[in-house]
Length: 374
Image (cartoon, rainbow, N blue to C red):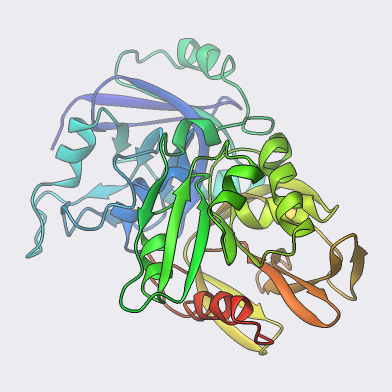
């Protein structure tokens, strides 16, 4: 393991010192914490983490090394990584290299040997904030000055950084049932895989797609993916989604796609104090009454009344899912003449990495496209 000293400075001036982990250098971003005890490879390659420095609350990270199968995109997207005790010797039959080596190879600056419990409690109490990590300086004042020059996450439009540059098709597995257009706002690879497994041809298209381009593919349904940044900046995709709803095409959205669904229906969004991140968040599905353990990665949420329904130009919207930790809106349903025509959830039912409690939502989307009352 590295013996190179590293320093971490928060925008409020708090300082943590440790050792370099991954690449040496300097990095900045919004500090957030993830509560998952496993699944770090999927977390690090999730495009939704663009611009964020991720703090692992699990104390021991890197046990299973890094393999070539579990990436959720073509690269690591986190701006930096913070761990307490990195594994010195990864051990797993699929492991090809260590986590430290992969971070180094992709130029991702991290820090280890810091009190991650104290750091998590600090931002839990004071909220997510800008942070800098450096192996280039030991001067906290100099690093703090650079931290304060960085943009805050609120107001950032990051979908253009992570979306695909060209459309591509993920073909249906087995007999084709429907065609879906998936707008890539930072999509994870497991999402079109889950859709295709249900007999759907999935046309993945860039975030800047127009409604005319979507309509030309003659979709039976439209999907908006997860993604990074502030949903208040995504006026283009929101406008396209309103055209989708005007046309009566069934809709399903995940994470950022849930926030944009809310905006398209006339609801607001707001920034959470420290967000929800990890694979162990409890959510209740009000349509079934079941409680699910779910995977989250979001720092913004939809501002909607938890009770009753609201009229929109496209039908009646209700809150379908709620986080049991803090009553944050975790899902929306849109019904027209009593029939479900669109829905979204704030979390990640594609289950990469785990859990699988919410996997049924992909089946619900198929039912909506089939004209069944889901």
